[in-house]
Image (cartoon, rainbow, N blue to C red; front, top):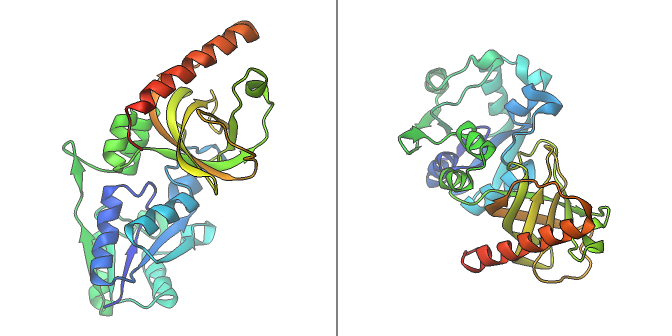
Length: 288
């Protein structure tokens, strides 16, 4: 049987993974259908900076689960106007399938008019099967992307990790900065992060860096600036050669301190040195 799994899938948390794995259990080549941008991003506009996974991060996370086929549908003004039935009819024109797998809270169509019940009824009338995955609960509540966002917003990296099933990370491209850190003896990678991507609260963190074509699990002291869109700065605890233009992923392990305001370069240098030492101690006892 041919199966598809459908949803926004922002975060690819264990609830999302359960939907996808059910489809893969039916059809190892099941196609995952998602949207770009995710609906919340579309309605939130350019000021919405709460996405848990960018399109590329989502694709990698799905691949890690075993997904080899991904269809990304545009979520735009035309999509928003589609009735629930029009949306499902459009799916049949884009894909061949026998089974649709969705999460318990999946909605579709204009004004979220389509529900799991209406999906079941439509599938029955059209000769398809619908499987609705039950909620997956952790801590007596269903795992949901918005619940993870709230934890991340408060700085609860451990809570975020518990619900995501992995540590939170951000991926960006290394770009040139103002070289202030280098002048102080602490050169940093400056990561340009997509503006939609949610960052942890501002401050200094211990973390791991994966750097394209260079290495994985590189220990680092990471700085998240006091504004929503970065750049995120990472001082690697071991020297590397030229890194500009490379894709880099920062995985957050532990927050070390809030943003501090100091007077003068000497105080700033002492502050950074202390943060770097703290990051090294934390990461010595942590597994990648």
